[in-house]
Image (cartoon, rainbow, N blue to C red; front, top):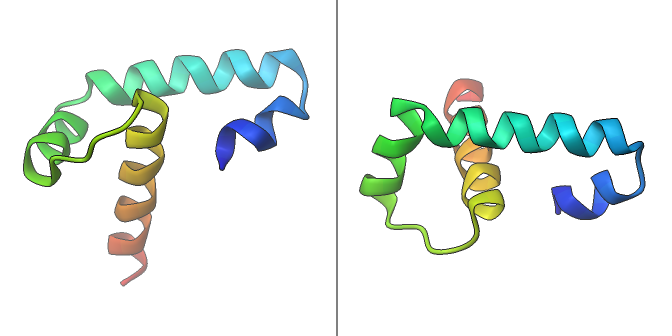
Length: 60
């Protein structure tokens, strides 16, 4: 999981990840994805899943 990877890195990395999560959570694409997928979990888990599914779609 991302949080365990970041925990081993510099504190600045954690700050960047937190800022990125907040920005993604405010995006209309993420909010639409939340409504369509009804994914339960923390914001971090939701953002991680959103990014994963977005990258899978782009890779396809």
